[in-house]
Image (tube, rainbow, N blue to C red; front, top):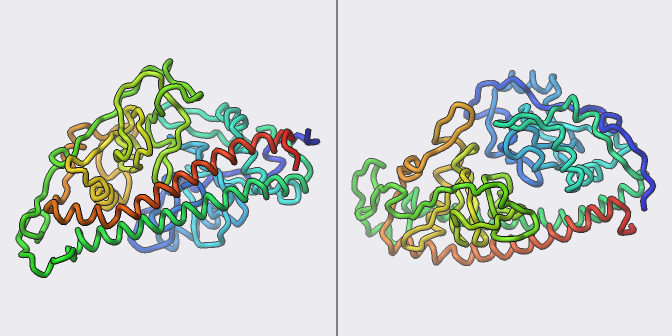
Length: 400
């Protein structure tokens, strides 16, 4: 067993705070301001986050809403609270909204990576949920969170534990980057063919006017339900849920969405609304429009829909929806949080090319999608190994 000393979390940090509670006006070109929606496992989607004016940015920097290198960022508010906990590695012009918590470790007492892994330990995460309030919109209460008890070994042991676990995370992050590059390549091909209309043989095709502007003759604007089967999720009773792997994976919403496919943490012993492997999983509750691909047969709850192209052009449909929903919550309504109905889903407008072009695209990008699937499988195995090792290292069951 490791010899440890117990501290309050606030005793290990120079500061525990969150981003701005003031939301400046967004502009097309300015300084990035990130929220919980921009977080993923290893960082922030800087390109996709909102932009603000220089004066607003400088004010928020003075208000200490800018993350510093070695700060720990945590999803603080919303459906993904506590899902993403990572060490901020960069020194760039960026400020945060209040949905992200900022921990600034005292590095002479606590290794930032060790603290990150400590907080992601499943047993610890379970305890941290006691510091969350709110039914419709869960939120970490920082005032109470600061008093959370943390038991840590001496700093050299922390460095060793963090180093072992970081080796797995480095491999996961590298594979995630490769997936992103492959997906961006497929998305670039999609835009060239179906946005710029420079598909094979386009010079020989006549273009005609349409409600979408000039499009190739024979192409049409259609509603999503005309070209795809759409299943709206429905949640079984919670008494049938389990974490032991009995039944099929169950996903209520985006909580366990990954960059490409979801992680499976909750299972359900009764089958209800089913998504088949390779179905597109589309979030119909805030954040609306987040997209993953089912990597196995699974059950979907009321926060998701499953979409399958009627002519099996699944890659084409995936990249088309990704192109349409570059920002979340662009459709839907709701008093407390955004949501969309079955009718909303059916009425999503898309371009439907002739089958030859759609199938050529699918054939072209299928090898890319297979590479992505293989990389996802490697990531899943690395995560399982890391997650099995993490609590054993933290408890001293596995010697360092």
